[in-house]
Each structure stands twice: as C-alpha cells, then as structure tokens.
Length: 533
Ligand SMILES: [Zn+2]
Image (cartoon, rainbow, N blue to C red; front, side):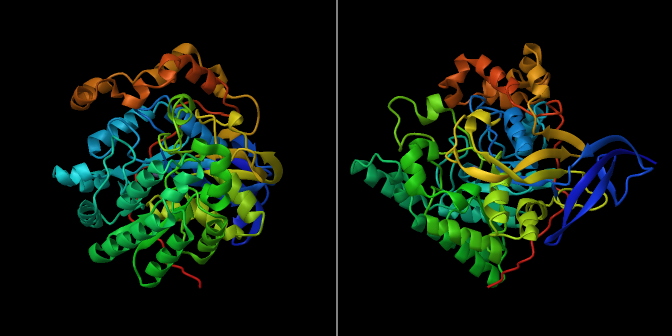
C-alpha cells in the first residue's frame, strides 16, 4: 500500500510519557504507527523533527465575526490565527453574525458563507435567545441539534445586539428546551442586574480608570449567575456548561455540583489563568476590556487548581476581536463605552504549554485532555477529532517545547492588532499544524496567502458566494447585505484594501482558503466526572 503521508519523528503522548514514532496517513485519517519507515511508501513526508506531537488542539469558543462584522475579523483571518496557534478545529459561537445563527437556515447560511474562507475544520454552536423564547421559536432548538450543532449558547447579560439576552425565567425555558436534545447549554454567567447596577453606579461616581470595569462587574455577579445555572440544571436535567469561567469561586461551585452528580462542566481561558485586572487593565485599558472581566492573581491560581482537580474541564479562548479605530480606542470612547473582547485563538496552545506544562503546573496527560480530548468529547466530535486512534482524522499540533518567543500582536493573523497578552514571554511554540494529514501551518515566512490576487480576495472575502441570495431569499430580505450597524460605522468599511494587505501579510499558511471543512456533531457524549479533592 502507498500511504498519502508519513509524519516522521513524531513524539506522541502516552499518558505522561512520550514515545517517538512515525504516523501513517491514508485518506486524511490515521492509518497506523510504525517504528521504522524503511520500505514504507508514501506520497509525502512531513518531518515532526522529534517534537511533541499532540492530537489536534480544539478551540471550542471562537467569535470569528463573520458574516456581518467583516471589519473585525472574517473566517479566513480567524482560521489563519487558529492554524498558526496549533488549533485544528474551532467551534464558532452563534451570536456574532448578521443574522445570528439560531435556526437551521441561519446556520446553513453561515456555513455557506464561511466555507470559501476556512483554513482549519470547524463545527458550530447553535443559538437560543430571549427573543426565541418570547416569539415561540423554541422548536428551532431541536432542529439545530438534529442538523449537527454541538451545543447552545445563552447570554444572561446583553452582549451582541443581534443576540438578545435571556431573563431568568426565559433562561429556565431555554434550559427545558435544550435538555430534551441531550446537548450542553453554555451560559455566559454574569448576573445582569448586578452588572447593570454597579456599572451605572461607578459611572455616576466618575470612575474612568481601566480597573473600574472589573470592579463593577464583580466576582459575585459570576458566582450568583453560576448558582442560578446550577439550580436550573438540577431542575431541568440540562447539561450546564459555564463558558469562559473567570473566577476561583466558580471552579469551586462547578466542582461541588459535579460531586453531587450533576452534569455541570466548565471552561476557562488562557487570559483568566495568566492576567490580573489590576495590572492588565491599568496598562491596556479598553484593550484589556472583556466580559467577564479579568480577575485577580488568586483567581489565576485557583483556576489552574480547578484544571487539575477536574472542576474546570478544558480550555477555550472566547476569541472576540474588535476594531481599534471604531470600537476600542475611538476618540471620545472610554472604559465604559469601548466594546468588550480580545483575541486569543493564536496564543492558547503556546500559553498552556509554556505557563502550564513547561512550568510544571499541569501534566502532559492533563494538557492533552484540556486542549484536545475533553472538548472533542464534550461536543460530540470524538474520536473523529481529539484522538490519536487509527481512523481518527489525522490532525496534529507539533510543538517545539524549548523555543522562546514573545507575544506580539503585529505578528498575529487576527485583524484586530492588539492583545493584552502583548509582551508575554513564552517557552514553547507551535511549529507545524496538520489538519487531515495536510500541512496547514509551518513556522516559516512564506505563505500561500501572500499570493492571493485582488480577484481572489474579492471572491473569497469581499463578496458572498454565488447563488446564496437566491438560496436564502427571506434572510436577505430581512438583512440586506448582511451588514451590522457596527460595520457601517467602522474604519475598514472605507479601507477594504487594509483587509487585503493584512491577509497577504499572514505568514506560514500552507493551504488555500476553503480547505477547512464543516464537522457535524458525531454523537452525544458526556465527559466523565472526575473530581480529585
Ligand atoms: Zn464568547
């Protein structure tokens, strides 16, 4: 047999140890592991250089802002950032698009629009909002689940205008609807009344400093929101998932709920493990503004502890880039009016490698679980994704554990151009990203994106694929152009050439836009509850 690819000299995890092997790939799937490659034929050889080779890492919480917010990001730049960061599959949120994705047609439209742009594989969150509850549209929940959405997202606080928040009783009805599907319901856990009240109070008192944002949206607002979510999960049997959990007390509550046998899970993000609001919000102001806000050094440590004791199940980024000129540092904007969101998909894996594994905070097997296996299982993509089994997709993240480098937003593929992680010195860098046996990223200067012509970029980025308007006439009738109000007020709407320049400057991409494929949920799977304290 002639294999398609041999990935030579791959140091793969085996528990907390590693073994050096060669990985055979046929038809984009893992076909075997062999000690010696002599006499084995393959069309292509990729050298892993003896580096640590993980099952492809997954970011299950991205906002790639397409379609509707093309001044912030599109699926090309977002998935390029993913590839550069060793992420082989992203799971995109349903809220940051026009329209948002909370019906099968809206999901299908989004997939049709991002398909020509994607560089890595992608699955989709389904959506449910207060509007869906009020309008009697909850039938959309089961329909999205049947279509292959992996989970459902609700917001307790207003966030994206296209995606209305739920009141507490509306959230209860959303829980009931999602419980019937067997899929997780992810909540943005911040109590609306608390946040709203204290933000207004601080504003009235004249607080304009960066840390004021974090102090107004206090830890207690997340705590009571998680407590309410746990009560609703207990009552409805829904699988509650706390997205972007920022506090140590949150980890404690989730751990206790797990111990009581409830199906409650959580994720945290690299920035909640490494940054604290006092330093980052003083230094970066609106550029470090996110919701929930950055917390304290103590929370950093408690969240690492949560990863180790099993109360935090995996890592995701909440990658949500905004345009500096119109949404972060616009003249007259302040800490209260700037938009909340930061990028992250390009730096998640290296931060966990550097600050977690290389510093001895987490073991190798834990790192594999929280970057790959657990999100794949939780969202029903395992063992197609998240596994190094024969028959699994040949997705790999290859990491040079010793390479030292410094985070610099100027080198990142995200269009936003800022990050409060700027200047963080890391040990450990992604050197190759492989998706379905194809080299998608290599840490070199040249890139297929540099060669895209004006016509290519018109077709891929600035126009919608042919025929979509005819395919979704009702959506286009309601949302002509699919533009958001924010896009219409943006800087880049008048400077589309900046988007082209940015894309051509992204380094190391080895495949053409459109390579990434939509991954439907395979099955419904529940993570084991392993609490160790
Ligand atoms: Zn988010």
